[in-house]
Image 1: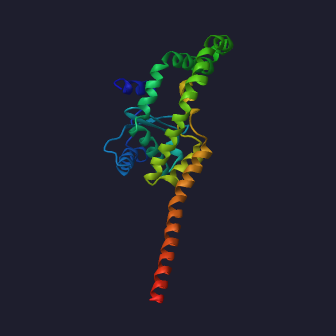
Image 2: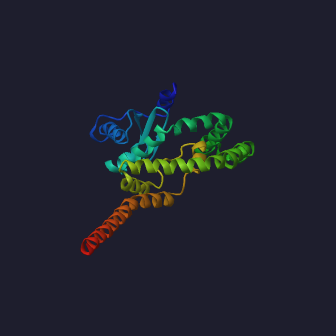
Image 3: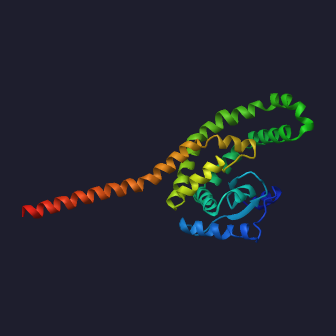
Length: 239
């Protein structure tokens, strides 16, 4: 937690500018937090990446420039609500704990992904390096990630439900339809975590069903009311 701002500075995640578009983000985050009944919320930062994405840490929330540019205010608020639910439930802390427990695997996987996929001069040695690091990939993807699948999928559905409860259901569905998944992977570790997310179609299905429930309850209540009124009138006639 102490070194989190240093890590974000190293990744070149900056504060939002005071210009119109980014200047409105911090007040929007405060508004969403208040709407969700939260008395505190994470510090906002911006990643200058054209790819739509959002990442929540223990003390910070990072929005990519691509997400800010491609989504309207209501969709950004829905994404914030989803991430605030994760943050308020301590999900980033739990992920960081698992990350710490599997740190040697994470280091090997992330080093391989960065060096041998990003640095062209050493890509010819990628096969040799794979021979050395494949056990780390195997443990991370076939042991650690499957163990986290059930919890990870439940967390995503719960975060979606939190955004829906705050009134952002339609905007969340629109955001998911635009980006497929706004929680994108930047490292090999995050790729493994991302595999624990439920399919986007299932998340959209759950959002649509949640939106339909109030309409069903209203229809059922209306039907029950009509039936009660009918019985009342019938009793009055018989009297």
